[in-house]
Image (cartoon, rainbow, N blue to C red; front, side, top):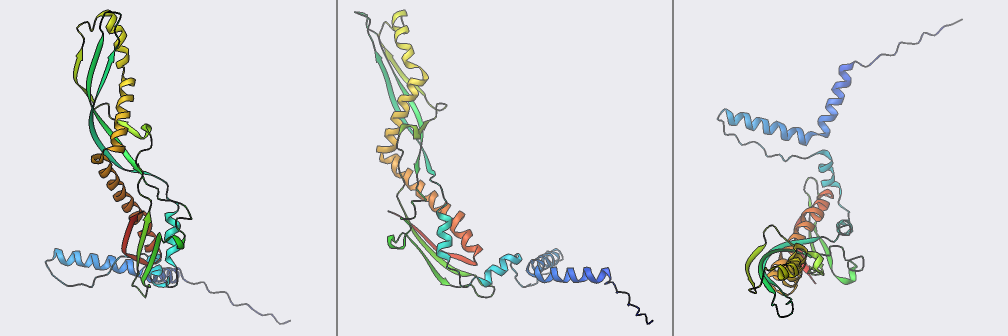
Length: 274
């Protein structure tokens, strides 16, 4: 009987495995490693007083580097628009304004004159509502409210460039008194006038409850609502502030990060208001 002796399988040394793993990691993370080496070398030479011109290497993770060079056939328009359509309808551009109002009560008891008037200084806060998601019909190509123009495609390590222009409905002023708040900590009475019989027992008991904080707050809120919807010195800054905040939110939180993830940079952005 012939017996065949099987050769014992050789095991790969552990140091060879670790060397392969480290080599693979060095290849994958080469940009990050090169950035760290150059930064450390530059700091060391600076401490020694040596002014050397080292190559400039930008920091990048592997997934950033890959996405910057392979996304050459991506239609970036729908990707950006998909992010925008998920935005809620926030209240932006909060403005603080002051106003003065008078609360007067006149309730005479027979021939006994009872009246009381007080003027108050009040501080109001109002915001405009910006519809950042007008719906699919608003973004249809025929409407012309959105355009993403690709100036250049990503190539090698160079990202592409895109310009985006949009049109949104104008910010909406407060729709009810409940959209207005009055800062009662900064508000207070300025002047008071009353009949000679006040605060007698009859007049005081009759008039004083009508100056409760809830009554005064309701009147101040109504006055603040009128200011925030009719006074141009309040409405104009309110709308401008809301437009500025909306532009910043869309550009910095939605369009630019989406383009960067696709290997593009935002070369220009314009937001108009219908």
